[in-house]
Length: 169
Image (cartoon, rainbow, N blue to C red; front, side, top):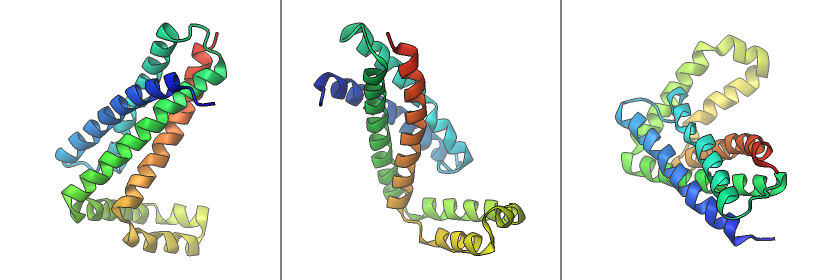
């Protein structure tokens, strides 16, 4: 059942978290780092903070007896709106920055794959490695935004379980 209070808390804290994540990604881009590479992982730091704050707010002002499942729903709402907001802003950033940002990411990913070629072939096999290497040339801004959405949902899902256990009654 749809609980408007959970949605409102999810939107409030999720959008704020999404903006914080995007500001970190934008700062990385402006400092000439690849916001989609290793340095981009710093943009995941606000997620557990805002999940915690959202659940704390919900427990303090709406339902003092938060159970595990209600805590999961609140946490996942924050996570969903974080991932949605950040991926939309990332798409806009890529669109406004131009194709150079995507090409930089592709070049860095290819360089990383070349460095670890033997290990990757041993793990995946040469055919799959070559297919993945060639597929890098077809990356689009929407693919990067969708990948960002999925990764944030996964990370937020893990933190949601931890937060729901922490805040249960």
